[in-house]
Structure formats: C-alpha cells, structure tokens
Length: 159
Image 1: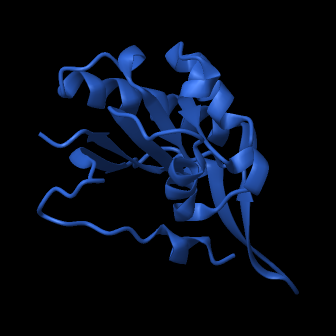
Image 2: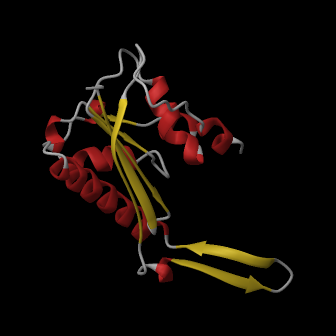
C-alpha cells in the first residue's frame, strides 16, 4: 500500500565510491489500448475499473522488451549483453515472460513481484536492492503502467 514512498533514491552530480551512472532514460505513453481499461459507473457501487488482464499483460511484456531493445541499441549495447534487466511485473509471471521474449536467462531479469506482490513504483528499487551479490552494470530498469505508460532507465559504471 505504501510502496510508492519507498521508491526514493539519492542522486548526486559527483561520483561516489558506490555510485552508478544513470546514462539514459525514456518515458512514453500510448494513445491506443484505452479499450483495455474501462471505468464504468455501477449503481450502488460508484465507479469501478474493468481491466482486460491477459491483453494488458501481453502488451506490457511486449512494450518492456521493445523498450529494452531500443534503449540498448540507442546506446550502442546489445540487450543480450546486459548484466541485468530490472523489471516491474504487474504479476509474478511477467518477469519470466520478459526474459523469454528477450532470450535472456531468467536469472538476469530481476523482479520481486512473485515474492512480494505489486509494489508500484517501489518494485524496481526493491528488486535492485534485493539482488544477492554485487550490483553489476550495464543494467536497464523497465516498467509499464497498465500497458499504457512505460519507462526505462539505463545504468552503468561511472566514467
């Protein structure tokens, strides 16, 4: 419930001994797919939101994979050489589906959704912090909000 408040991080203009560089970021939204999310007024219940879960999840996985590929290519990287893809998974199956779509081993797609549930915006820093072992780069964080908004960030070692 309070996951969004845990998503805060410290940014600085100067490298520190534990710094990781934010190299690139992309945020986007779509004007299509609105039929997959429908607010409806129901007498006695107010407004409820109806979601077509399977098409939304399929769209989310496709968008995250496409965004990882595009960001990698834009920065001269091959996505299959990324050390990690840190993914927001609206449900616990999405990270494995993303790994398959990117042809990556499942252990290189980090997510805690299957274990902790949907943490909202905290899902990416929680997955990053929960990873056993040293944080390795380059890594891309990627997330989709209901398949209609998405973003990604590329992290690598400071230069």
